[in-house]
Structure formats: structure tokens, C-alpha cells
Length: 397
Image 1: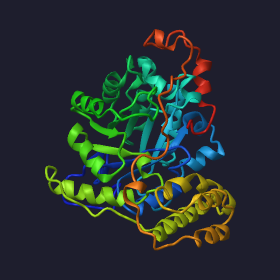
Image 2: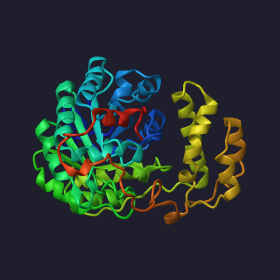
Image 3: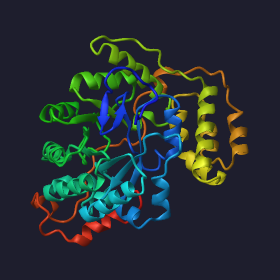
Image 4: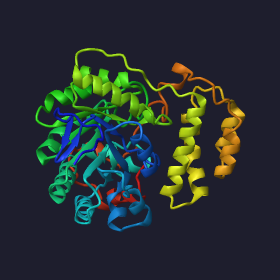
């Protein structure tokens, strides 16, 4: 089985069980973003591993309609990758058992990096690894239930600079038998502010020589991805916010890693994708059409969903505030066509104005935590009901 349409005679860059990933790029799960529609669009540009939105184990076990939609995959997705989020080892184990027994996933990723307050204030997400026993229990339960299906984890450095967990958690996950560990080089307190700590990623790589390590954080271009590989020694990269409104970034990444595979030590200039305004409009429309298919033909719902992508797709292009406002209120495909028709399709790529940071930004935040959470690295004294409240929603994001 392969997670890439790009094949070579060389050893694959990443190996998750029987899954060969020739291009060491993983699309980060992003709530409300990386549904089947967006994964398909990104895959049209380049290869790698494309992970579903995060779904809570509890919702999955209860088979809620939305959770079943989130884990769905298009027939073209040769590797069905699902990210699972949970706070209870038993429920996580049951969710993994379901995914495997019903042949719904080829790879399962566990999320321990979500910094959203509604999750962390109940002890979930990026707060959870602080409780070493709970973290180890969840990962072990998932790996046991998965059998031959590879399990990976994604995490942050810790809660804040004084409460770091990534080295302990990485070793515990390695000991549990995961196929890979991905680290976002920020703490929960960092949220999405400042610069990602690539030194921490390098330190994790050095401390775990016997398991694949991937780096996440501040990969805004293919050049950033290659630089992370060289500076940290990781086996692959996880790309999140950098591809928002830029699915063509995966074409750049494909070309960069093809060159890197031939000679990791030589910088090779690649021709990055520089779409004019007409092409951006085409990609935006294509995304919408895929969303209509994802939402079972519900055009109105697809148009509501695509609105969040407007600022990202047209970042840096001189389209004007009235255009952005109109498109952010689009109601139908015909309405969209009318709005897009007002553009100058020959307007060239604006260069740096269209690149760089996008998505969630802002300053540091004090992480919301359960009372007395930091007083012990063990779970003792924490009410089970508190943790369960961290899974009340479907996606956790």
C-alpha cells in the first residue's frame, strides 16, 4: 500500500507499517478544513499523507452522523488516514477497534496537541500529556486495538515553558509501539504565536533514534520544509496553516522533495506554483464543487463552508474589500460565478504578499486547565467526569 502516486526505486521516505510514503509530507488535521473535499484538492497537486479532521473517540463509538461523515474517505484516497482524539483509554480503544474491524482506516493518528480552551480546561488535547499515566494508557490502548494498522501521535512541547512534556511523551509513545511521533514546536500557551521552536523538534529527533519523528510549525513554503529537514534531522514534515487557501503548495513540496531525495545536501531551485488570479478563482470553484459532493449535493451548505476560505485564497491579490465581502456571503454556484466574473483573471501572482503566515495567529494565551491539574504528573484526584466533558463535541477543534 502506498500513500503516494509518486513512486521511485528508492526506499520510501516514511514507512508506517505497510504504508510507504514516498514524499515525507503530512497534511495536518485541521478541524473544519481537512475534510474529504480539501484532501482531494491537495492530492491533485502533490503526494504525501493526507489526514482527516480530528474526530472524538466518544462520538465515533456512539456513531453520531457527523463523526461518521468526518471519517469518510473518497474512493480515490488509497490511504485512509483518521485522526482520533480522546481522553479515556477504554473509549479510545473501542473507537480504534471499530475503525479496524470495519475496515474504515489504514492509519490512525492520535491528537495530543489541541490548544483550544474548551478542550484543555477539561484536561484534553495539549493538556493531557502532563498526566503521564493517562497519556501512556491511551497510546497503549490504541496500539493494542489497532493490531497491524499503524498508529502515530501528534503533540505539542507541553503546556508552557515550565511544564514541558514532549520528551517524556515521545519516549512513552515509542515504547508503546507507535510508527511515528510528530511535534508541533509550540506549547499550549504559545497557541499559534511567535516562531515555532525547531530546536525542540531537533532535540526530540535526537532523543528518539529508534522511531520516526516529524516536525510541525512555520512551514509556509517548500523551502521551509527542506530547511526543517536539514536543521532538525526529522524524517518528514507536517504542514498545516501554510496550505490554507494554497492547495498548490503540495506541488511545490513534491518538487522540492523530489530534488531533496536525489541529493539532500544540494540546494536546488524549483519553480514554485505562481497562479494568476484566474487560476485562483478556478481552484476556489473546484474546492466548492468538491464540497458539494462531500455534503451529499447540498450546494447551500458547501457555499457556507467555503466562505471561511475566501481570505486565504485571495491573500495578497488586489481584489478589493467589496469582492471579499461579497464572496464571503456567497449563497450558490451561480452567485459565485457572478462574483468571480468581476475579477481580472490575468492579474499576476503577487509574490510575497500571497505567501507567509495565514490562519490562526495572535499572541500567547494562558491555557485553561482543570483545577489543581499541574500539582501532579499523575491522574490521581481528577474526576472522571471532568475528562469526559472534554469530549462532548464531535471534533474537539
